[in-house]
Structure formats: C-alpha cells, structure tokens
Amino acid sequence: MYVVDASIFSSLVIKDEFSGRAESFLTSHGRSELVTVDLAFVETASVLWKHARVLGRIPEESYRRLRTLVVPLIESSVGEVVEAREVIPEALDNAYRFGITVYDSDYVTLALGRGVKLVSFDAKLRDALREIGGVVAP
Image 1 (cartoon, one colour):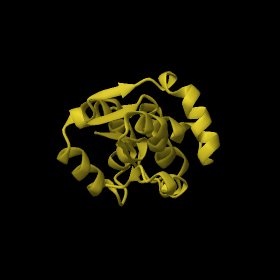
Image 2 (image 1 turned 45 degrees about the vertical axis):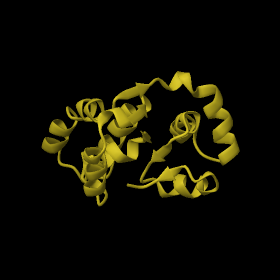
Image 3 (image 1 turned 90 degrees about the vertical axis):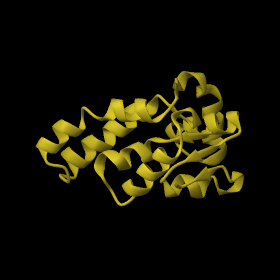
Image 4 (image 1 turned 90 degrees about the horizontal axis):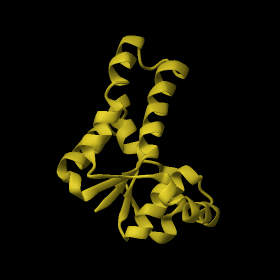
C-alpha cells in the first residue's frame, strides 16, 4: 500500500514533466493499494488554478475542461480517501518535528501510521524526510 500525495494527481492534471511517471505509477497499482488524504482534492485544484490563472500556462478552454477532471481523477485512482481531521493532531506534531507544512504532514502522518511509503514528486518533502526513508518518487 502507498499514500499518494497531491503532487502525483497535480502532475497528471497539468501535464508536467512528471506526468508520464505519475500515470505509470497509478496504472501499475490497483486502487486498493492506494490511499490519499482529502486535502488532495483542494491541493490538486489549487495547482490547476495556479497554472491557469497565475502562471498562464493553461488556456482558459483547457482549464474549463480540466477543472471537471480533478475529482474523478482522484476518486478513480485510490481505494480510500482519509479525512484530514483524522490525522491532524499527530500531523501537527510531525510538521513541527520534521519542519514541513501541516498539509504535507497529513500525508506523512497517514503513511507513518499505516507503516507504508508516501509517494510524492515534492523534492523538498523528500529531502526533509530522508531520515525516515518513507517517501518515494514513482
């Protein structure tokens, strides 16, 4: 089992340099092997918004189509979506301990609690957690 963070889903939505690896990872693992935190919906949508509105990398027509894919993409990719409120108390402590955001720590805490690896393209997150060896890039 793996905990999948929003960077994997975001990569697929905005078609960045990691999207091929993200697609390969998700298709090579069954839904029952993958879990995420409900924050993934908001974070993925936020990345799409940023690339369309702030960075201007996604034209409005494409944005309008892609915005409808965020929820179905995540729901069809994972077997379970855990509510952030279930991990918040420990996630706060882990954020402080590892020097990462609480957003990132929600995924980390879920992975640590289940004794599984976190899958992420976030290099800063992987660097911050190198000591526990629980974060991988697909």
